[in-house]
Length: 79
Image (cartoon, rainbow, N blue to C red; front, side, top):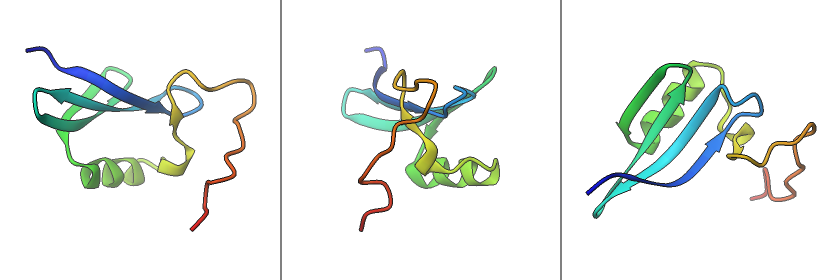
């Protein structure tokens, strides 16, 4: 059974991409940055790696949604 990408988010410049991957009942995260690919990550590992690289997870948007101006998300930062 091949892995399936269920969802992907990326930065506005598409330099960083986070994918939610599933194979069977297993689900994990993958980070793609340039030629590097980190696979089988937990969400905690994704948060840590992005933070250490200066990428704020709040700046990620669903892949392919970027236009010349990032869309304003009224729910961003809402408690």
